Image (cartoon, rainbow, N blue to C red; front, side, top):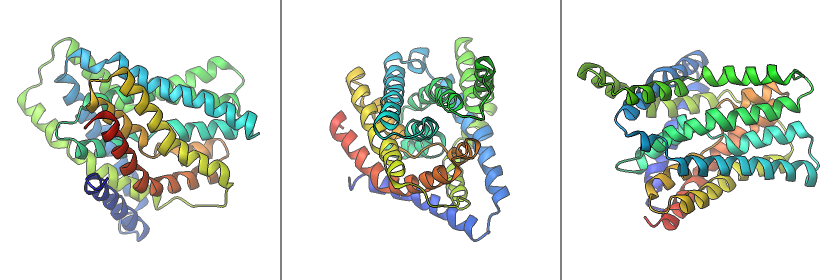
Length: 316
């Protein structure tokens, strides 16, 4: 684990810098929001397009990798929802919100920076495939589950499906993947000046994304919430999900430890950055805000442990 700490600690230090800058109002909340948009709409799409254009299609669509991530997430949603509602006797909507915290990681803002720092030649295709699974399958499933159990939700299933579909097709990272895949299929060769431009944009994605995470956490207001669901959400996101993903990916891809480590890192990071907003939509803002803050701080301890386990398990 000591070999992992020099990689993880600088990442959390940048998050801390963002937190302090936003908390002291050195950087305004509006600026933090705009920096987040820059990462989502400019820097990370540049990384994705540039990377996918340089890969073979078989590397982009590794079915075993996709299946490992999908099975780990859907399996955890199913089992976790049953346990939360039938055993813990939680309301269905509360359980659905918890499951979203369990399985939707902050791949873009925390997972990607850790992957880049952790390996000399990180398999960015693993990051791109993770985004496909999250945005096309896992997140829509979570929103459908929450909508279905929300008393304020529309009763029309077609309307629900269309609303989820709009969220998916507007995602800039998914659009970047589609552009990269189409360009790859048609054999698109970028002009050297464009490729250089994308190469200059790419490194900024890491530091700016981490800074934005810290700045966003500074505006989170922690309120009193129930501890058992909070503890289980933290354990589910930071421990259960990555260990389940690690077991499946090592079984399905026994000879590709780099991809196995990539998926483990992605599933080991805290929940998506808009989890508090999700909570606000469904009337669970206090729980989601507290869970996001607690999980982010707890991940400073859990991520090195999970990565160390993955190194041993995958034979690094």
